[in-house]
Length: 302
Image 1 (cartoon, rainbow, N blue to C red):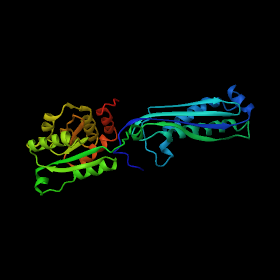
Image 2: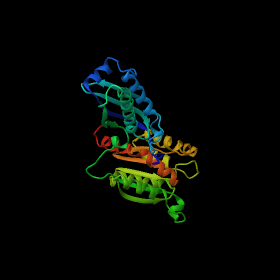
Image 3: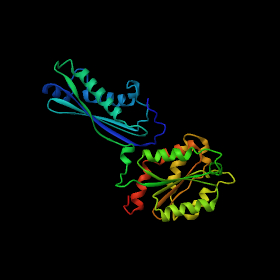
Image 4: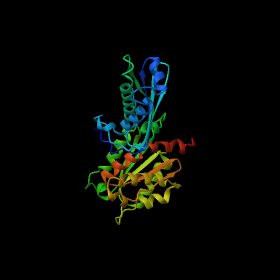
């Protein structure tokens, strides 16, 4: 199976369709509920809904997901039944397979009920008509790459006694999202140096995104959030709420981190934890939604 644990929940939706082809007189019998086995439309509808909920039982690589809503409709055309299925879920993966499974099951059940009166039956044209949700729905594109700076805040790393891991993880993640890492610096846990460098990057170098890693815990030298708070024009609490929620779902220690995010001019500044795991999970929580901040900062609205 594909590991979806790094993903975040979004509202997922899919609609699929299929057709059961029959003689016109058979379709009329379905509409008049004269098929000997019973009401074809209602049985197909029920079978489709059940199949949507049981999709992982027979589609090998499908994840077990909470289906919030599934509906199947059957309409009679001149020489076929049009079967449509819709599925909705707030989850990490798409629901197109659930919608397709619903259509396939509804078609099979309709076929089974109609075959005693029509030997010409066939079904097919099963396809996904529409799907929504997931990262692709929330991607922003830019003519020029977003310019970013990664600041590693650590006395030991600055002194050369400890290798940086989190800063490199953040840098590689940014590059994978087509974000230019223009600056990578290592600074000591000294508030004035942190403050001075952030101000310089925002005001003089016009960096779009500054991400710090380290100094967000409860230790006696963890000053990064307080330092950042002194120089931002406005805070962005939703960003750190998303980071902490994502982290807390994976480790209870995430609640001990004191990330801060805010804006200085047109620069977005985000404090991340110093642990490599915390940095990685925080970046997973940030993208792709964080990119939408820049059109807003540039005056483009929502």
